[in-house]
Image (cartoon, rainbow, N blue to C red; front, side, top):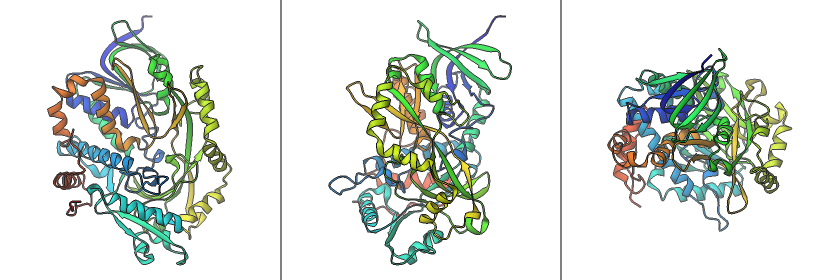
Length: 503
């Protein structure tokens, strides 16, 4: 029996937020291109993009303290925070453009206004938060943020966090109404549903990539198995994007591009404590981030979050780290072992030796009982009752281990794009801020893989979709006001940009 064969201009592996974003961008820029999306599972956005598998934070560095580390001289490093807030503003512009064009009909199904807060207690951390607030106030993008050490003000902002807390305990918080809660699962399904309506686009569920190789003419040939019928199809593609979450590393290695040898991975999972009791849930309306434990990866920064998922309001606390050798929640226990190659085994060992605090943290997390988790919650919410909370599994992530060709190995947090030298294949690795920065990440990918088109025939369309494309918002108060008021109106967010003062 002859194997079925077909060709597509673009092949997207994984039906998550990254593929959905890239596919939507490409169909706006090159409507004549054919796009085929292959997903291993029987549904869209079932892994990292699913609402219960991530924090749902529109990551904009408003509340995440790990994006503003304290330097050895005591000053606050704001570089990463400023970069991330610029990125999320780009993301919101793209979403707003899709809403204005009725590509997305109702933004309320995936994004809502939820204030972003940082909360700390103890003299040392209060001093840090005060310095952080003052450092961020030099930037116009952070104007509108409030800071308080007043117990009464804190009680108004976060009553659950303050009730039962000793007034003799020094505490402080920042509050930014600009924050959002985002259901990336619903957004992904909306984008892919719209993509399927476009000519030349085809979604294939229950299809697993079994092999991929580059042909002599530069195209890629993939052998893909239908998990239901067990039949196999051979597909050639001019461009391949591997947006398979934790599964991206193995596929990147299978591609055999030289760049793949620079990477390894280490899996980290998570669990949430979830409260659905309306008497509790309706008294909390914020995403409240605290300080991470020593050695904790950024995804494990403790936070008490308002979540609205499929119309249901809940509070999530965590995440608590778990460990599995799986790279995907619905993956294989062999994932970690199959990712270990002769070229990355030494970097993996070196990272293990150099990150004792992380290993100690993970071991400590694995020993926690349900009562231990409730005790951790009570550091945030002193009067929490165990009967109001249940434990729920979160998503599986793979931390990037970079094998520096100049020597040494690095455990990298964040998101990282790996692209072949000829720009015909790209893969996304890593974790937070991930989905929140999907649009700028995909724009950078387009600039790398299609540089001539981005600077020429695609540029006008990109600037229509993202008015500030190629322009920095910080330092342009009139533009900040215009853009934020537009995106807030289009996305139905409860934010009106206050007057920005020149610094």
